[in-house]
Length: 527
Image (spheres, one colour):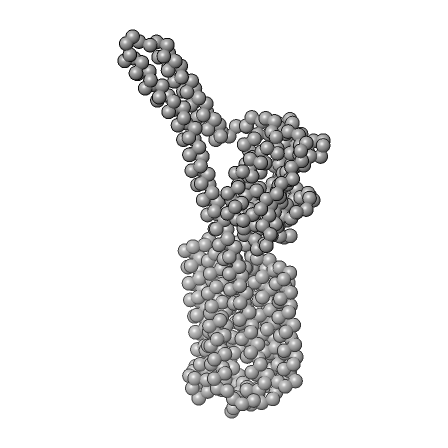
């Protein structure tokens, strides 16, 4: 006779999927700790495509009016590019935090790109005429701001290109902790040194650079348009490499960021690169959107990972509390069982001592007391042997077990938990279920785990109906089945083939699920 136990997330009677039986043969995938290793889901890809479509429609709508001149708003550049700078620095900080968790040089390269972007965005503000000063705080008033802009949009795609080419390198990781922090400090120092050198060239040595604006910022040579074409091609190159090597959420949203920068150059190429036109203002708006893109994703995904971590810690604490309660209950039960024979031994010893004081000596009463002491001592030894047997690793003795009775005992054990969680339970016990050969304690623990997991799944998931159903059936031949069904959130489709993997964890459906077979030849298997 074989016994099969299952756990289903709805009130259907269908058996567990056959695909789950093959899941034990698959290698267990580690839970991703950073978004650099998290694969992009269909939902995220849909959102990314929607964002790209909106940006494309906006660029197409603005393009015909790009050359229309608007009024000069002196506060526009300081406000917008200061925001861009702050956003890029925060993004770089979060990427360095990702590196400290899972050190990969590709993340260092990407974080460096955001430092370049944030620094040059702010430096261009300092050099921009009428931003903080009529002729700018640094540079030659006409060309420095434009050359800083070129450096800005050259170094950022270059960093993404380095990231895309190195992110799959296996030997690039360093151990987390102090070595990772040293690598971050060295990277930041090197990036700041490069920024300082390039800034010195375009501010103090502008006369050696090609002239972009000769007399006024509203009139430029042909070179700026050619540079915009080169910058667009450079960004497109980084985008193409990233598209070819994309794997993760980070790759997906870096592609969206690069696409958000594209209208900045297309408007200047097709329309006009003259400052303070509709196209010029719109191009800066696209830059702001692109800068905020990855930061938003990092914050959302980090919050998501934190929520899963918090749930895991909560469940771990609950399990620890349950184990402590179980130990307390077991200790109390052991003390209660031993206290009775020990008390009887003490009472018989006192009686025997009183008999020794009596005159004449009552030998029959004394013999009876000593016999009782011997019997109670044997009983105590049996209790201790039984307790030690619970902790032995050897095979337990199997006996014929009545499944319906065992299931009712489990329901009595979880009665308090059901009341606390407000869960109703119903049973469908087949009357003619035959007995099976199994170890009663182990089998009871299996059923208890499944029922407790069902209670926890209902408590965690948002469900209006809190109900559990316990079913016992027999096929009339060689299989007896027990089903524990609940109204919890069930198993996510992505996790359906992993539920039998060792140590697999799901917030909505915990890892106690299993199928057990007990046969008459004393061999058991667990899936």
